[in-house]
Image (cartoon, rainbow, N blue to C red):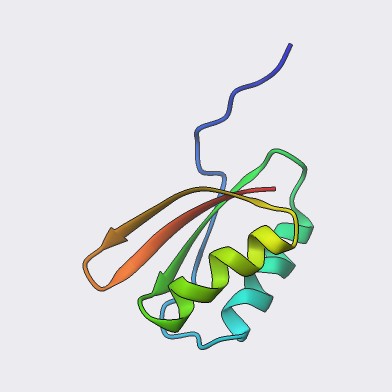
Length: 79
């Protein structure tokens, strides 16, 4: 049976972390997870939100949602 997972299993706060360090930290965390696991990252507006989700998708991961909260974004990624 296929499990449907909408819950956030892991979270990392990358607010204040500049490119490309925020992407590298995201990628390293995703590499620790199992296929199908989800990771929520908090990242800043600007260069970060423009680059990180695209870079993550280029690595073969899936962006499930991007939500703006005040001055930052919550990005939900599935491995």
